[in-house]
Image (cartoon, rainbow, N blue to C red; front, side):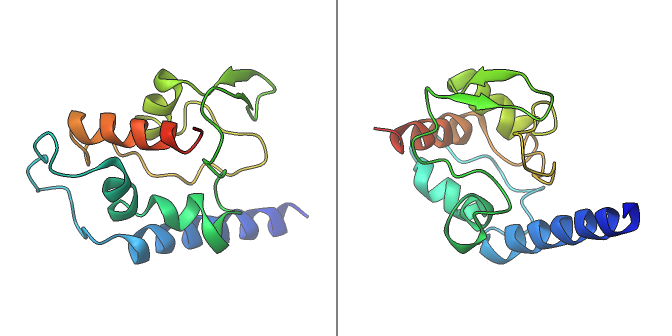
Length: 132
């Protein structure tokens, strides 16, 4: 039984990694200069980082859907709940292993070195707009 869970967890991790790579238009972002303010919209950043590969569409089982999440309570794996506000969204993007949503594996990559402050703000605002 434990072996099946390990295999399942590895499979989910591999699929999440592939989804992020397949849906990303940026490729290796480790050496790129941060985008200047207004250069990329939050929706473009969402798409180019591959967020839609896990947080929407057919791959929605890998990560929670983000539509209508802003301002709502989110149940975490440890049984606690948090409100999905701007601080929570920023933390989830920059340090995704800090607060794991119940029912999901911790497979989201850390984007702290991949996006600029302006892109982060645009991304948070885009996610917020999905709840309006």
